[in-house]
Length: 365
Length: 234
Image (cartoon, rainbow over all chains, first blue to last red; front, top):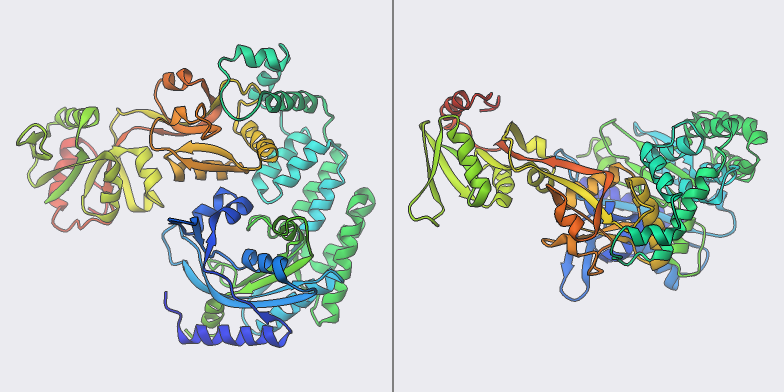
């Protein structure tokens, strides 16, 4: 899709503003190795990105976002701290008929800084807020770090915590697991029968009775999970008050300052979230210092859980008309830098703006 | 002229001819026995187009045929937003097959999608790559697994003999069509108890994108003969 002159002009304006804010412009390949992105995002990304085949390099993907190549470049050769910006096309396959763009410009800003993560969060949000000021947009913030801290602090088995953390970005699945671990949902009949069968003999015997052994998944792997299932069946449910707090947290939506007051109120009951709530308070102070009115700024504890699964702290989005995708969005992705950094990691936060949508809001296209 | 696409060979073609024949619409191959041309008697203005069953969804999507008979699995897998592109006019009651997920029978710890997801997480941690599911139904399987919140898997393409991929160590599980389950059992696989992705059968579809201006009369006559409701856009 050819970019309209007004879109290009808006993109250049944002790009210049990011550079004025101290960011170094970086370039990224349009064709990225599919394997890295698939390992990171899972098979779902195939439904959203264009995958093509290179006779020598294998499966390649048309750049679905800049985050991965920018993080990779930083982990390879970046100095610290660093601020980067970029401007270019990204490609998103649309699986539903409609007028959502499959090719559009993104302008982005990323901060890699170990010193004061909450200050960096506030810097990015305030920069975006200033650049989008005056437009009919609704800003919403969230913090997946609080949710993760709450899960880590549950009084339950490490295995259950790991299962919940693994599915934190899949709200429906997370909810089903939590319902089961909290004893709110009955043990499914199929699981009950499975447990009865497993109780009938040693895993080795049961595997032998089941027929010819095939496949790469080893007998030890199967036996280990069978043992884990039996162990889990004996684990006590998550206590009702703790589960209730988590359900409450999942649905928390309030202006940021009120949300902080609420979180402070439940911290004595859920002490594990205290460091995360402290960070939230520090961030709100940093936002206030940058002129953001945190008494009215919207906060949703579950924001960002359905987008690409790498945000693990502060998240934000700017939404326009209800049927539009986000005009701008971003967040913190510390864990992603560890995955891509081969042993090294650095706290990172950033976001993107879609200049095409901004230009539309300005009435320029 | 109303163009109707029908599978060009085998049982699907014969059963389709039988279904229409039982309703007073005679379809037959014309020319030599192996020649892909046909004719329709009983309703005026209907042209028979013999096609590979796998290509009928694409021809419907493009609007090059007005009606088409093919498996509902193929339509749902090959067409994005399938119900915005075609309308189901009638299930034909044959060509039944279930698209299911199956794992090795020796996986005594796996019975449900939930178990598969947990096994995938452990498998990835142990082997360093995502658990492989062999299939040719990429869209249907991916949408099903996404809907059910399964992670840490990958789909590997298998256009045939899919049940053999686990033994050959090119996949850990399969998602494939089965009617009796015999081939699965013979290959030491078992179906997940909640692993039914789609129950497919041969179905008569109408294409939303076809040019219906010159086909309306024939469609009304055909619908009356078949005892079905003509699509509103026709």
